[in-house]
Length: 492
Image (cartoon, rainbow, N blue to C red):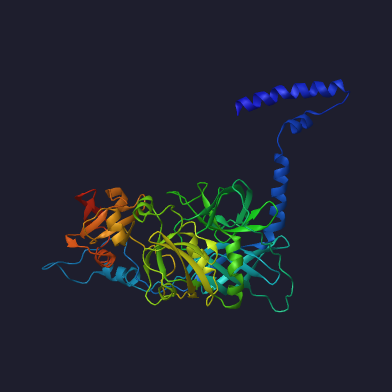
């Protein structure tokens, strides 16, 4: 910074002398503008975006009926013990009557943001903003003043955290609403300027500026994670608001933040790419929900150890850890241990690619699926079915409180890992920072016992894990490098 200032300070006198030599009179302010960057121009762009887009950004507030609950006492009142005085206690009677167990009738309230996408008053927001709401109210600018409208839920999709609501027009009001233009998130680049508008902490129409920090982020929110990361300040209440490019077009829906222990912004925010919302908008308007394709496999990432064990020439693709009985994949002949490398003419580079590709495939369509099986390539024909809420999703990465992914040991794995038998489960992935990782469990370990009980396969593992309570410990007997060790892991 100082060095840059010195160079600039030297430049100004030289420029001044230059203009004097040519008989020109230049003001100091002009000289400073000539020697500075284009920040004033950038500022003007953000000012114009704020002026033009603010009227179409709304505050979304919700109200949900509270279920009757029991008010908890903040301090204990001792009851008389055996042989103690049990005469009437006026204080206790008063406490129990007014502060004891009684229904809590206070409604649950929520707040977030949203933005109008057409003149009829359709609004995009986050599903978690309106989840379980019995009443939705939106507040928007109308000729410089804030005005409240009731709104109706049109459709929602919890898997992508997107919801579509619509403003309830007043009788006789046919006025068109201001709305934002939906851009494209396909060609976004890291470093692009972006503007976030929303209602952080209830402060309406707050404008913040930043850049696209990263693309395609997976943060564990769901099977279709593909977030835009930005350092534009996003805080609680921004959820559902627009992320806008310098053309004034919406390229994302602000959704989540990493806040550490502060609860506020630390420069890491996430937005859903607008192309995901555009892809399901028709379904939300017409059906109120989203129809997705279903393959019926449980998949996992190909680690270096698994690549070596399966004799794969590359780590691209999605490894099939299990196949759902009578599902589309099972009917087509896809087997456990297959590596899916191509689906419906689209390359599957990583595990995370497959759920998104399958979900966007029309149910009933017959597609070609390329797999690698026993080092040979095969093409299978799969008829895609409709994904139902009761079915397993295409992404079979099971929630594990220990942070482990395990799989059954096949003959190929046993041979590659030089195991004497196929009993136990192979640890195929360990989530950094989770309990198992902290305790020392590694990828490639084979778990043969849990709490002194033999583990023969993944079914045994998950059944035993389901019996372990939070805060307790699991004692693993692990085979590693020709020896066995015990590892104790505390359940989070």
